[in-house]
Image (cartoon, rainbow, N blue to C red):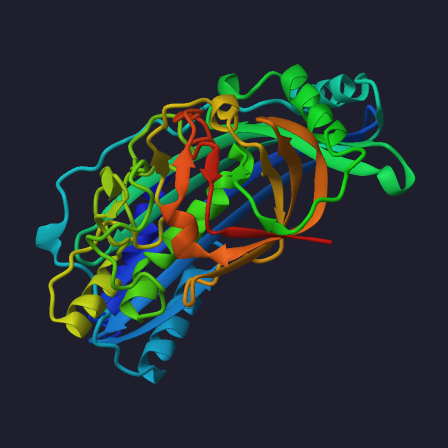
Length: 446
């Protein structure tokens, strides 16, 4: 932020006023979001965008009662109005035995600083050029009919947090990238797809020509689809969709689901939940990774955490609130894993085979490149999603398939996952590789 010390001073003033007005504790945070974007279609500029927003959140504690409110600026009058609202909400609330700031003795003396901020800011002309180059490359590919548009973007987020237990922190993160969408075929055979790139540093994003060719390839591969029969077949999730399975898994082991007994694997800590070939790690300290962080909202320093090792579940994903709740309900002691208000930066150890070798022995199977609809029910474990992709015939992708449904139970799916080796830890969305599931999924056609 332009003047972090000034923001800390304003938050300190509000914290002091909160205590003067009867709050036992207080936690305040200010988030500043700025973004630039350029949209083009068929080479013409359709729009430039710039947005800037500042939001301050105030949470006050009156013993075990809490109240929250937000202000959309840092003006003292706006902050004071939000404070009054938060105090009123706390007075009107009921006591929650699991609320409270963490003990100041548990706070670290310092925090890590993963490299997640690129100070350079692209010009509008640079954004326009990226979008136009990606679109031009895609349109030059044979069988691509027209463009659905291309967009380039840059963003910066800044965050300041202050709590009355002594926790204070400041972080900045940037992101740059672009994407392009194109159309192939016509009539009943008309298909649309896209490709994109995103990274912390502009120098890490893919070349526009690479992205444009990939968008064209993804679109063309959907043409001339054929029907397939329903049944049980090996299913392979392309890297671009494989992360959705792990999102279901993380939701099922999250503190809220576990502490409230709303997960189908709530009794599986220490037991095998994924295939023995899978080790899953939260690595929040990785430089130039979009999911890295320095701390969570409780003030715990970020640290690597092995969530699953050789298929065995080693840890839930907990903030301090859920750790207290789970400890009280189970009679066992649980500590926060440093995940209050933050998501794990997932990394799956790579398997032994590349994606081509992973499918080489499949006589008939389904290679998923896109998913639609809901997903898994983490309470029951039931899984059902619409999907499209390519049919695997004799070990190779053969023809396009769409309008199919994948159904099964997440426990069966998880235990049958086998990872490929295509993992790039330093890029957004590429830390989960292509995944093969031989059993546990039924394909419904039509």
